[in-house]
Image (tube, rainbow, N blue to C red; front, side, top):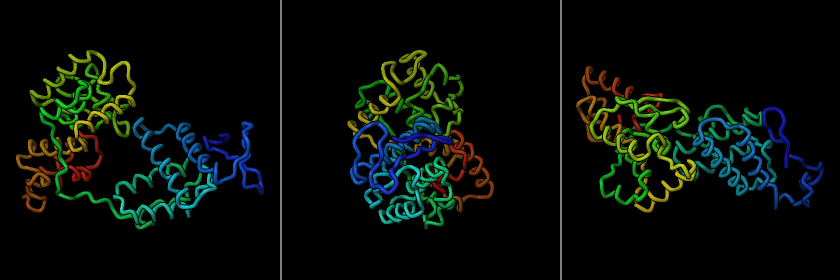
Length: 324
């Protein structure tokens, strides 16, 4: 369909002065309105395959966003595109639609990051403005003081027939792990006695981290997992990560369990109370304005510590979990 040159930039082939693509595999020519959108999707997939930046989860989400963007561009009337023909008008049209759809600021910013990745890979960085302010995208709201915490009880877990998935969910609750981290968990590597250690390949952003083992319940869970899988992982030997992820999604949906990211919120709120002695704002505790100077100092130190435990580099992000 196309060749690669430079740093993996796809080169589409088009006959000059013709509305038809010149295919190199001997297939008959197809008009633009029948072929070119499929061509854009195909080229963007190839771009992703040639540039495997980030973790598997990051790559998968990027590909998903790019396919969505390609389909949206087609629906907006841009039928003659290829991977190298991204222009400011395309970005403007997409952002306008996203704002009209009232998508969350976080969703729009994630899609903008994908657009910038695409533009950079085809050497068109200047097509997308560096600042989201240029497009009128509002700042992300970090402070809501509304709890999004989720908890799992015994009856919830009994609805999950797969022991590996059940234990992944328990890890999310006990240690505040992300879904991918809990699915890929290997007790032989992770269990260090007084802490668990997460591989960089399991985590968002590819950064390894450690989380303390503080309670008997955490210790018992780790022992159960080790008894279940030995030196293996919570992904059965006959499955890949993607297959296990699909099983996780299917079984949690069948059990009526949704937004399991809320287990991380619950961990952060419990940890905050444990370390400060008072509830977090999202859990009904005092806001930052209501704290004494000494309490504010303790509050900041605890926020920094919990941010590291749940895998965020910025203390500010923790406000999404525990409020401000």
